[in-house]
Image (cartoon, rainbow, N blue to C red):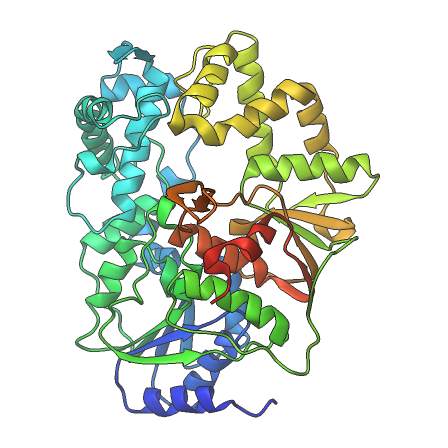
Amino acid sequence: MLQPTDEQIAAADAFATGDHLVIQAGAGTGKTTTLTQLAAGTSRRGLYVAFNRAIAQDAVGRFPGTVLCKTAHSLAYAAIGHRYQARLNGPRLPGRHTADALGITKPMRIGDRTVYPPTLTSTAQRTVTRFCHSADPVIDRHHVPPLRGLDTEDLHAELACRILPYARAAWADLQHPDTGAVRFEHDHYLKLWALSDPKLRTDFVLLDEAQDTNPVLEQVLMAQRGHAQLVMVGDSAQAIYGWRGAKDVMTGFDGTALSLTRSFRFGPLLALEANRWLTIANAPIRLEGSRSIATDVGKVTQPDAVLCRSNIGAMAQIFRFLALGRRVALAGGGAALRALALAARDLQDGRRTSHPELVLFSSWGQLQDYAEHDPAGSDLQPLVDLVDFHGTDAVLAAVNRLDQEENAQVTVSTAHKAKGREWPQVEIADDFHPPRDSDEQDEHGNPLPGPIDDADARLAYVAVTRARTRLDLGGLTWINDHPDGNP
């Protein structure tokens, strides 16, 4: 067993005091090892709350028997969710059946868009999901998701006004354990559990990936402060799920602040690269690379993984490697890309699509115009370009040619899907664009680069810290010429 670092010893000493702790653990710094050391040093009963089921199952073999390793959903299921088992495992209901039950019988005109019953129904259901991720006691207008094509504040306010009665009816339907017209999901019983004000029978709670906690779970855990020691563990600089409603509960947490900064994944050169993104993101820690690991930063000719900003960027990389005759895998599988391609084909064939990103467009031409001329649609332009150049059939054929990761020569992944993973040689794809120029100019009259958004810096930090032996900055090379790139 490796000798604990000074930071790990400090964490163990602080844990022994019984104080609430917040531990900032940088990329590859032995977070799980540290938590198991804390748990092994006490006879008290503990609860380790994992981000997903795979992590929880792996943790069972690593933590002592005094610690229960669970996800939030498994805790909620044991308490309340099992009562809804009939609905969870029930047959998939036709959308029309759900629409009729909610009273959605005809289209609505909002602005210059017609919103049809299937879209109204799915939007009401997504509103309930957003409510379930929140700590709010009732459904309100801010839970209504934005829709492409109804991007202005006024149009969204009108949409919310129309959707709220249906969303509240859906939530009322979901209260019945045995029957109902709305599809019952795991997030529904998690919310019902949170609303029941549960008390966890444990002496301490270790919350992993605390920077990506939904407010509904935060609410449950903070209510345990009076009787259980809380240990928030994660990396604030890896908080990259804000767009999905996640919240960094570490920032501002009332507890003893500790850190793990020695990375066991990569060497000093890559730590320097990570640190400039940590500086830009105003993160609370800086990393130290392991001197026993030689990690280079430079060109990679045969990457083990290529990390992209978006699914569309991932699609472009898949075409690239298939053209080179390489076996390609996509982290997480090709379902999201297949759904986008099928939605694009529907629009090209003059049919509406149910895809949530494209649901309000009646034709491919309307989407092309929106992507080119509306600032809110600029991120759809790569999709339009990809489909216009290759065609939807070629996109679908490429997705069908994907290999499993264990058989592939290269794995393509979004940076979001790469979180928590690592590869020997990593290349950053070319869809990580620099910020737009500011209105200011240098002494030669050239526009100065604009500031780097915190969220973009955090995503870049996640991407660059996936490599063990060599990193190709690729699409992030522009940072070398940016004023903020030399901390």
